[in-house]
Image (tube, rainbow, N blue to C red; front, top):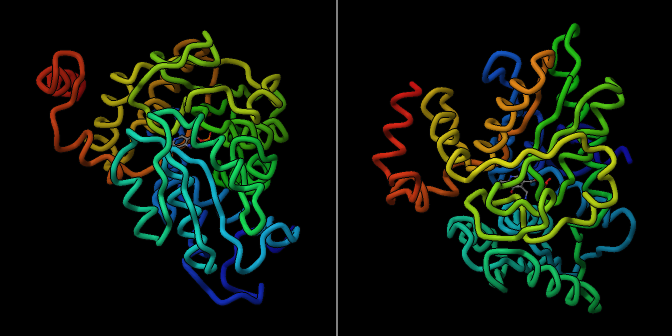
Length: 330
Ligand code: PMP
């Protein structure tokens, strides 16, 4: 699968493109012993650029996707943005099936890349997923199927995970991975890569407290877009034995941490990055012996400007409550 590794524009026979800028993001020690892979720096603004490129190129190699075909994928936003970018570079028409009620920027970004966005259902991805699967069966269409495809896990195990391990200094092995569960592909794939180098590494999922689907079978609205999409994804089901813990984080805590990351670290990220940091701090308190906890800052804050950075934020006591909390913490 050599052709699927990150191309630096050298020797793989294809002309250089923006896809060559995917991957290679820094790993930052955001707090003592807590490291964040800053994935929001990827083209299209999220971690999902990695699986979008990998899954589409793998489908090309396997002969499932050919010139002239249309790619169709269900996504709460970031995978839609990322696949639309890859489709634009490679010349495929793209349809994103996206639930209503997501951040408007994510919808606009897919459209900017030339994709057709169909809003289906409300907030959760369930109905969009059914629609994408159905259309994906029709001749001339191909659906990568991020929630089910083992290629999603493969990318994270063979590319993102080893990239992180290589960035840790030689005396450090990852003790724990903390990651919100959308498809579960990052948690499981990077988790597998960590377990290869440290069989004792903990694999820790994160989900919104308001919609704790894995922990308590509930599905509700929440504000941590990109995780807890309305069901337990097939990938998580298939590999759940690898997961040591799942930590629930409230939307309010995730948003406060999101603002803190911008103010204290200079990184403008979205709510799931905040949720991941909150969970890392809790894990560190629960298991003080963990020395190297790794998480991911998954997408950029620009995607949520209208929702959280301009308007009043419906957090504990409204905006005043949030700012009060930030000032106490800073
Ligand atoms: N955070 C954000 C912002 C995302 O878009 C996603 C992917 N939907 C995730 C976290 C979760 O990643 P995964 O699908 O690999 O579980």
